Length: 388
Image (cartoon, rainbow, N blue to C red):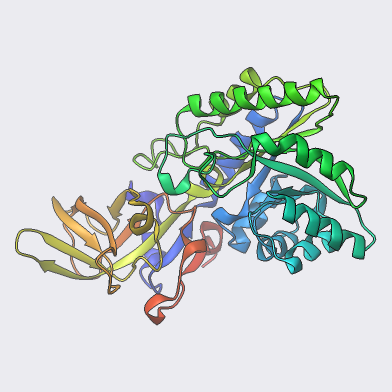
C-alpha cells in the first residue's frame, strides 16, 4: 500500500503538500470518457471548483472535457489552462458585473442564470458590448439528496436556482430580451451522492418539466443535470475510479431526452478526488489522559473538509510498518475543530513520520486558507516528482 507513494522523494520535501497521482487521474478520465462516449449526446464539463491546480487542469483539458466555472477567477483559470471558450459554462448564484463581462469577452458557451435580476444584468451588459449571451436557467427541482446538509443544493429552501413555479415566466421574459438567447435548463441537487436513486428522482422531475415546456411549444436544446457523483473515501486503493458506468446509465435510462437535445454534466469530485493526497509530517506524539494524539504539521487550513463537513478521510503512516496503534490525528491550528480523525488506527507513529491523508484531490488544495498566517500548501504531481 505504501508503495503507491514515492516516499524517498517525499523525505526531503517541505510539508504539508498535496501529491497528485497522475496515473489515477488519467485512468479516471479514460473511464469517464469511455462511459460517457457510449452516448452520442452526452457532454461532460469539469467543475473547476473541485481543484484548480494548473497541472491538474492541463491534464483534464487534454482529455477533452469542457469546464464548469462558478467565478471569474475560474473562467481565467480555464482559459489559461487552454479550455476552449466554446466548452466553458459559467454558473453561480452571485455573478459580479466584471465576471459577466469577462464571460462575454471570452465568448463562453453559456451562462447558467439563477434569478430574474441576474438575467436582466446579463442582458444589459451584453447590450453594451453589442453581444448576445447564451443562457440556461438553473431550476431548483426541490429534489433532496442523501448527502451532507451543507452540500445539498436542490431543495426549495436552498439559495440556488429559480423556483419551478417561475420557470415559464422567466423563459418568456428571456424571449422578450434582445441580448440573451435561451439555450436550456440547468439542475444540480448536491455533491458526494452515491445513491443512484437520487439521480433517478432528478430525472423524473426533469422529465415533468420538459413535457410541460414541450406542450407550450418551447424547445429546450440543452439540459444540464449538474454533477454530484461521489467517491469511495473509505477504500481509495480498492476503488480509485468512481462508478461512471452506473452514473451515466442512470441518466440514459431514466431521462427522456429528445433527439435534438444535448445532455451536459459537470463532474468535479469524481474526476479528481481519488488522485490527490495531503502529505503531512508528524510534529509530536502526545499522551493525553486517555488517548494518544498524533499532532501533524498540516491542519484545517490545508484540508478543511473534516472540520467543515465532519468528512472522513482514510489516513496512512507511509513511513512505518510497526504495529498498529490508535490515535486522534490533529493539526496545529488554534481551534478545537482542527481534527482530521478520532480513534484512527495507524502503524505506530513517531516524530518525523509521514502521514498521507487520502482522497483529498477534491476540495483540498483549492479550499486552503492562510488562517493563523500559515503558508498555503504546494501541489505536486507524480509526473513532476518522477523527474527529480
